[in-house]
Length: 381
Ligand code: PLP
Image (cartoon, rainbow, N blue to C red; front, top):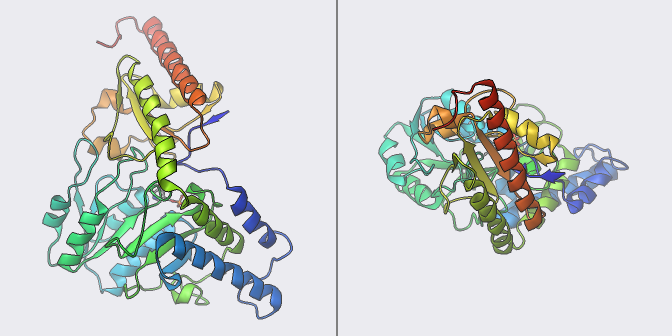
């Protein structure tokens, strides 16, 4: 099997698994319990908080553990808006539904993006008015991998006195994220995208950021996120953050070389196009459309050939829904349905990548030949 669906979920790192294991076996205690077993669980959460803070250039008290990216995004948006007594949120047309749908539940403005999938800081600035309380722009897009100018957008937000949140779920490990340097007030991330376990994530919130509790209960996570902590997944997240933040430039160099080989090979297939900027792009993302191809059927054929990938995003695949991201880029209908996303990691090899390109070419050709036999007048021009 060749796994090219790392943006959906990445393999669990052995060190993350090792960090989780004690809390799935011998130490099942509640971290709020006063006895030694409970305190050992509490210590594991403290260690994970320190590891996550160190990896992000943040303070431990700026880390709030959650159940994942979706909860972190919702917490950032609703919690900050409520703490500030309301106001408008400015976001972009290509956000993950965890941000977009949360923003749609509040007063909001949506910023369009270029045909390359990049947000213009000036366009964001134009949308900020006296009613604006918060801006939310993702660091990297989950479908097309485009990297957004968050440092510039954050600087504009500072100048205008509005909070800035970024969803960095896809960016962690592929871009340096140093909170001591970036003008970002809140940042979301998810464990299962970076070698941790599903069911954990975090919200970084800079000291002093107004937050209001969304889950009321026993007051865990300094009252902001009540509920007994997922100790095993949090311990794994701490270990995964330490691993993923090592050697980022080396990972980017290695993976982007493979990505570029794959993009070049795929572009040789007739009636194909790569979506999103080539330069401002995550090292592991390839998003490609084949004209007049059924992307769902292509993903199924690739699966039968031993290749795991997704249509636009894992979240929208299976739902037969067109990608709001590709639509925001202005990509026309005959391309939209024939889109697949291949997301690489450093464990992929060059021989896997060239093999995948050949398999995709074969599957696309087979699907087109089947259409021509069934509908002889339906050949692409
Ligand atoms: N934000 C982005 C950019 C994502 O890619 C995802 C997951 O695909 C999420 C948020 C949601 O994260 P989770 O699956 O941890 O809820």
